[in-house]
Image (tube, rainbow, N blue to C red; front, side, top):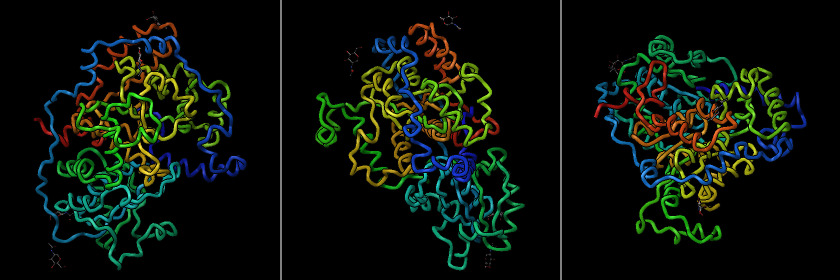
Amino acid sequence: MKLYFSGSQRAAIAGLFVVLLPVFLPNLFGPLGRASPSIFSEWNAPKPRHLALLQGALQGQFSVQQQSKLWSPLANQGWKPCAKPTNVPLPENSSGYIQVFLDGGLNQQKMGICDAVAVAKILNATLVIPHLEVNPVWQDSSSFTEIFDVDHFIDVLSNEVSIVKELPSDFSWSTREYYATGIRATRIKTAPVHASANWYLENVLPILQSYGIAAISPFSHRLTFDNLPANIQCLRCKVNFQALAFVPYIRALGDTLVNRLRSPPNKIQATKTEYLSEKKYQIGKQKAQKFVVLHLRFDKDMAAHSACDFGGGKAEKLALAKYRQVIWQGRVLNSQFTDEELRNQGRCPLTPEEIGLLLAALGFDNNTRLYLASHKVYGGEARISTLRKLFPLMEDKKSLASVEERAKVEGKASLLAAVDYYVSIQSDIFISASPGNMHNALVGHRAYLNLKTIRPNMALLGQLFLNRSMEWSEFQGAVLEGHKSRQGQIRLRKEKQSIYTYPAPDCMCRA
Ligand SMILES: *[C@@H]1O[C@H](CO)[C@@H](O)[C@H](O)[C@H]1NC(C)=O
Ligand SMILES: *[C@@H]1O[C@H](CO)[C@@H](O)[C@H](O)[C@H]1NC(C)=O
Ligand SMILES: *[C@@H]1O[C@H](CO)[C@@H](O)[C@H](O)[C@H]1NC(C)=O
Ligand SMILES: *[C@@H]1O[C@H](CO)[C@@H](O)[C@H](O)[C@H]1NC(C)=O
């Protein structure tokens, strides 16, 4: 299911936005123009929309048995990660250098990196550490080496593909600026979406042979998931799950957050500094607490693109409609449908309130350690308050770590996303309120590690939330029934599906 744009489309659209906005709305073109709702004063503080359910949820009780079932790890499903030996040695001579320029957010760039390694292998080429483009939406200029441990990356792949940090000096002319300022023979601009291995052999190898280098851009989603040799598929997983490790400071901050989530919450309401002092966390003496990560992407872009009604009244509706008009000029298909039609089809992202009700119905109670992996919530705290009411022990980076501890990642969208990714992988349970690249990446990675991951049944929830006369017990029964087989059961990859979301069977073996 796809609720909004893929990274490359978004990038293109955001580019368009940057170009068009000053023309249409010169007064809005400022640092706050895109994200801040307050300058439009476009929402009346969103109120809970499902009050009856909320009452039920706040009073809900679950037996100890139900609780322990909810938190128990997944049983062995008969699959384990496996890197089948590739049997294809490093070529004696490299056929040349492959350069890629990757757009999108962190998770889209990760897929691009995995595909770039695979393409280098197909061509017996040497890969140059990929260049990460600045994302126009999130404005983060972090480079590969600021996010990923580059020596680990090269080392893990050293038997498979040769990788260099930089081009040798005779190729130093081959830069992003060089390709941005003219038509160049070494630039591959026409790689089709999901291109085959043969396409690369026919179109890129000759360039490598003639010039010793080929720069591929755009490169997002440019390698097929089907009909590739098993060793290439395996290599993609090896890159994704083994070679791509975050830099030490991201891992250290992630570990700090995880340790604090695993410590018992402080009984006394302490001040923040006290709360953050290490003394309060007595790891090892008490049983480690379990925690769930909720990935909540609910930004204005997504709210506007979905064209659903999120309860912020007429002002919000108008503001979102205006945003759609400015950015997509009426090309948002969803806006042809009514809110009810969209909900019935499960095409509306869950609001923080709705995901809270879902969690409560699944059996998470008010003692749950909930980590909120989220960038910016459209509507701010007003929109999150119902979720917080249900889960008073909800935490995030800011509540768990001090300003000093967060200094290195603050304001950098990719690094913040990396920290959230790292914490998400370590959690007992992961759930995402909206499909998207982060959701898919974690669904895949956690499947690979056999970790519990709840996938909301959007169509079911849309229908349940539309029914205003539903009692809590009925809602809960329907939610439990509708999510029995959505907790991390292995789903085998089907044709055209992403190997990064469905690593079995290509990257996993029968145990
Ligand atoms: C790559 O190298 C392998 C092993 O040396 C060889 O079998 C294969 O044909 C080469 N492929 C290309 C495209 O050069
Ligand atoms: C590798 O390159 C060297 C030097 O150009 C050449 O002598 C050798 O034959 C090449 N090996 C292969 C397998 O092509
Ligand atoms: C959880 O809810 C119960 C009542 O259902 C209440 O007694 C208790 O204080 C709540 N705990 C927290 C941490 O809010
Ligand atoms: C709403 O839920 C109630 C109780 O389950 C049910 O009887 C009713 O048919 C539902 N209404 C609609 C429109 O689905």
